[in-house]
Image (cartoon, rainbow, N blue to C red; front, side, top):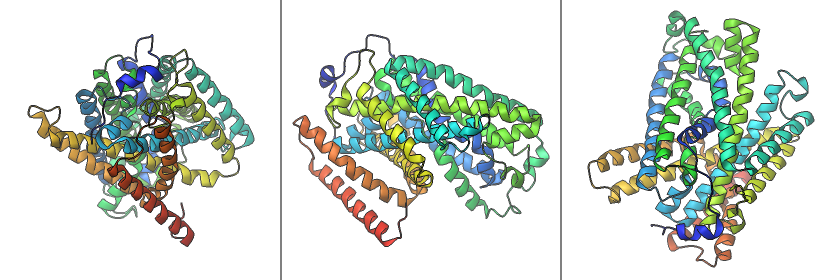
Length: 486
């Protein structure tokens, strides 16, 4: 079902920006900044605990191809549907209706702000390397420090999206420098004999080749989240064509860094020993190569990286609330912007939620980790809807007149298969529990539609709500019976 363009409605709710939009560099930084958080700094030991070099290479080939297809999806959709704002939200809404668009935005927002809590907790834990009062990340001192950082980012974003995006460019450059330094040192210290020893993991106790590949790919599910960053901010891009370019450039740049860090690590330390290096394992490896200063240098890089990721994800959080409100699928108050063009109500709501969760982590650290895993799975569903929309366009022939249609049919199909696999790999139990969050969100959707005096559900959407409700019932039954423990 196609959704009519609502651009004419936006003038009433969203004041026109008086400044130029985001440049290509700012959009690339948004992609890179949201993808590179803490994952790359822990990648060496996490991967070593899952796979030997041979299976690792196979897994990266599959993962890289799958994520490249998703990058092509966002690039193609940005080009063929330049009038659609909001990336994963806009594509889900245009392809499958207002309610599916809402669920995509709702799940994305939940995942993003809960993820911001994890960045703040890890930021304080990393500072604990230098200041013991912050050790662990969830002490009173750590939560107080995290709260100060949170509200500073809040104030920065309130002063305008372009200002926050500019700071993000600077921070993104700063956090890539330590990673490139590690790559350079690792390349010099790389020993082929260490890399090729037990190449297929026959003596590592990790299982067969395909078992290792699957385990390794489960880790890579999380390191690519953020690839959609530029498409979410498509409305604020200086040039719409830059959105697709930024997605592809950002993805290829991050993929190159991930491969270099991961593969070179296997040439510095035996796989079994590498798997036992404490996180952030990149720091332990650099300490092994150059001495104690290496661990401190990488820890500083991780701190900068976490700050950059936090800024990127705050920007994504507020935009994914703001645009649906403009389209009347979230409450209208979230569509308002301040005099600097920042979606202030959406920002206040997001910051308040993060602050409350930070306080909650003081007593509920373990439960919070379970919620974080759930949040990560929530963000995978919007990828699925985007890939499905690409396939739908190619099948219908809309916007196509030449051979590009066959190519995009292939890209959309592979991306959709990969997106389904990502949701599966994230854990079926999290999908069940996610339905409860979507059911709660449905009440907000109903509020927004009635507030705007618009029809609430179409017949297909009633069927979608019924599926969400039924899945929620199954989740509640499972929790009560004890076989669902998320």
